[in-house]
Image (cartoon, rainbow, N blue to C red; front, side):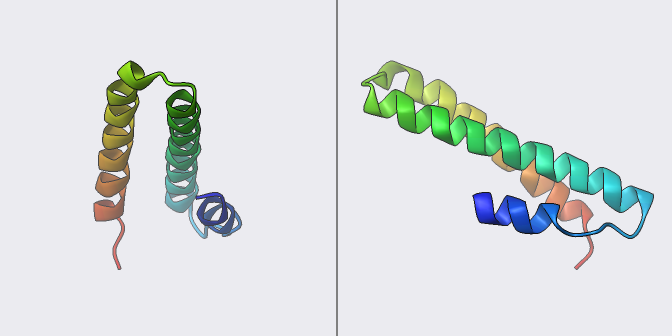
Length: 74
C-alpha cells in the first residue's frame, strides 16, 4: 500500500477538484495503512478479541474508497 500511496501522492492534480480528491484519497489510504498496521500488531500480540473491530474499520474504509472510485470517470 505504501507504493500506491506514494505514486498517487506524486501526481500533480490539474484542477481544484482533483486537489480535493487527491487529499481525500491520500487520507483514506493513510488511515487504511494505519489500521492494517494496528491489525497486524494486535494479531501478533494475541489480541484476537480486537480483530473484528479492526476488520470493521477496514471494511468501512474500503467502502469509502469504493465510493470515491465511483465518482472518478475512467
